[in-house]
Image (cartoon, rainbow, N blue to C red; front, side):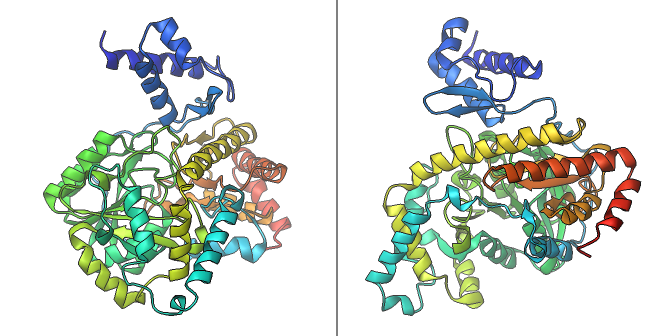
Length: 491
């Protein structure tokens, strides 16, 4: 019996236990050594099986304690089927809705499940503040001058070192520091596309990507994303054969909003497919570091033999959201990207770059990431279990392999905007599915940010939100409309 078959057997056995509800969320599963002994397999085979289970989001590990059931499997989002048609490219019109969605929490004082960021409790705030104090003290005069266009040399070195294990690692002269990941993506789109061009995006995808396309008058063609394996490459190939696509914007690791990641062979196929067609891949890897498995998955850029991947990332999701320090490595397009950056805003804040670099030099970043991943996964588990308890039974919930969000399918075709209007009156904000696609396929979905530190207040808000979903499900909107009229304090 070959090794591959053996570890697949272990995965199937434990999945069956969870699906049959013999194990519940938080229950401990047999240890790796127990599996080795009972099934007579090697330690490496058992570890590989558990890594797959962890990557699928079915179990999570506690260092020194073992593996535990991550969530109920019965309410998981179903796998997508290959499309029998090619989606038609469409104009993007979400900016007004997305902008209001960002403003609502401050405008109305809402509990904010909208913004996708970790709570400060999970970040090394004290250490980064000390790094900033050192930067200001040692470079008081030079900090008042324009910084280097490409970025602070100290930070460029640290970013380069962080990619050391990639198959194609990044050298310092291949990196450009930007104002967050979104500026990096905007620069890439400005370079490789012109108004009216078609851009392939994931469906669903991050709302900010669609906002970029709308402001640049670009059209989007959505490629389906499987909740487990990520981007459907067969559908992408059909779209590439049907339309003239100027570029692709994808998140192979930790899709937002689903939290799924492509397998390594899928990323290799993606890079090769686009490289051979000379179609640029703009890779959004903002959430790649927040992966829950034992090993952080490689970005597509790590396999880029054609220098065709424009890699965009940042420290916003892992260190300091407010610093807005991102970067891009644009392969053969890098010189042109530097020129666009200079024309746009010359450079990025030097003190903040230096502060991040000094923290990275301390050697604490990898240890912080391990703690942050465990914290993010624990948050996801708590949120998901509460949603499973408080929302109607027909609700379907994603099982992320990384990131901070849950993607939720509402029962009975409930319109997420109807739910949003009621939720605002209860001082709760979330992202409706409308802003994650140009199609109408996700109007009954919502995204919940799980970055807010778990508390009784959070649990109570999810309970209230679940009650509203139940109200809409039972009354087809009639009683909900009456409730909205009687409590319309925010119109």
